Picture (cartoon, rainbow, N blue to C red):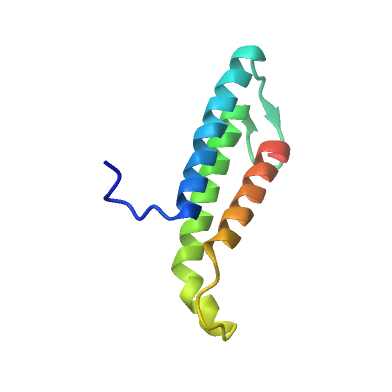
Length: 102
């Protein structure tokens, strides 16, 4: 069923985290409805808005890292490109920042 995608451990962990976040946000929204607030984003947002913006940002950050990994490896004179775990951790930190302060 999922043979069309390269399911490495980082990819599986990334999508599992997204699924768990969506489930958690659904339960949280049912228990405690959200209100719009203004953070560093240029508009008032709800938790769902911030999650969506954060997930898009995380996806683009991961894509940019995968695209630039070989160049980064050459720039830093590494034997092989840096691990995608670096982009995973960075994207989750950015997502947490957007959810908290956005």
